[in-house]
Length: 288
DNA sequence: AGCCAGGTCTGCG
DNA sequence: CGCAGACATGGC
Image 1: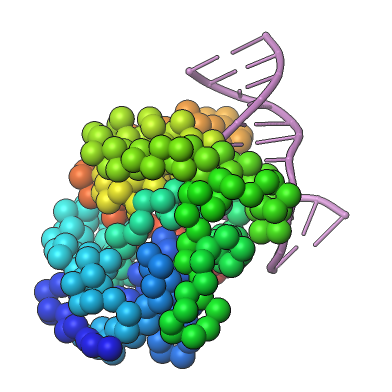
Image 2: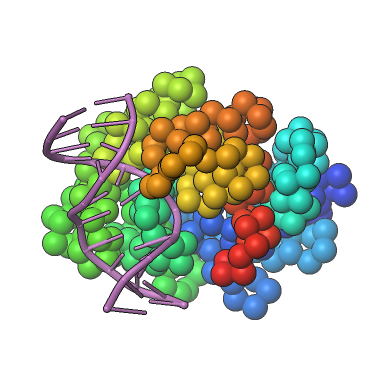
């Protein structure tokens, strides 16, 4: 049990960062947050400029929360117009966490065509079914399952996790990582576009998932994931949709992605997160 | 009941 | 290449 004090010029909003849809294993219990990070239970609480912690070391927590990054400077770089300015203002202290690439890979395969609460549910049941029980502290805590653990079961067993059609993608991707454990490490060393190509070769990983994996798992801050919400925001505020566009096309998403990366620059991923977290305000939609 | 969700895959021209 | 449909599941 310890605490770190946030420097005034390096703000951080713990609750916002843990709950905004980039991490799926955090639960709020009173004013504490509890979650499993790389096989250990962490408990965190923010009181003003203090973050109290149980589980990690101070250095490990600082790295997870990316407190070394100059958030105000990043905000200043992407703060190019009133729309993104409003988004930045709406989510002060939002930080992109440094999470485990393997867990992020599987998480964003689960994230296709569903809601954030159900992604949490799927990740939770995968961990309960195939993770290892954590002995201390007491409680029903499970590590995120290893590639071997997810590659081993036959699909009937995976069925218990209610993954829908994603089960075969999870299984296939896990099998590939299990047989080549060094692959994720090599991806980390590749240039952005080559890393993206490799990710796209995994079953269940398309353009959007690949960009989320690059951003949240590999800390590639130029990645600009385009999902339904970002598409709506960009069409409404930045890029008029093509005449006669009915159903969203991959071609159009590619155009949005290229625009976002060029317009917001090397921190485009942060801009995307500000827009995503402020989506309710930017779309005048109260339904989340 | 019908539509939608932090999309991807397949099959066709 | 680009487009249309299919696809599991659950919430509203």
